[in-house]
Image (cartoon, rainbow, N blue to C red):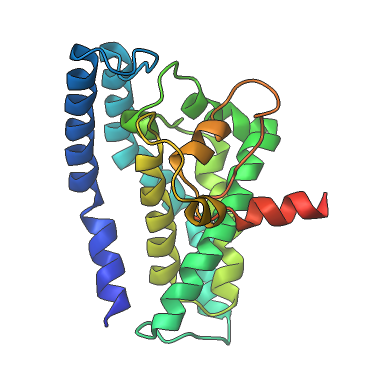
Length: 232
């Protein structure tokens, strides 16, 4: 099994999959509202969704450029200097990359909430009155987090993980979270809820009132939050 090719395919085709999912979700919401089901769900707002999608298009150019100019350069430099090297075609390389990328994302995300300089950008993502698939595109531009967030991934390069594996694993972590922005999915099977980030966990993360503030910073997994809770 060529893990590298599979992971690259997931990352490269994600945009089409997300937009198809968005269209299906909007259609399902409109049908549900017409039938009078779940009137408590806010669903989609025309202006809000348009803004989110516009930001998503801008992110496709601006955000990627700022990341390359910032912490991503440090990842490349660390990978060039480290004496350690993992084989790119080894499945263990990609499994480790996914695990450590999610740990790095946890600290990147936690920093975005706890440090005001970074929250100034990340707060845009939490500013919508709606919670739907399009909300995942609602990201601040030109912020310190865009330039410096990649620094959390430098230790992965020092450990010898290939740069491509690090960047693709991070991308997969981000892609996974897009469908988590939904009101339509309630709690899943308990073991899944315990191990993975789910829509119910992410709704808590977007909560704006106590005791829900500053919860569930993980991307793929809930273990980092649980470990942090045990130590506190």
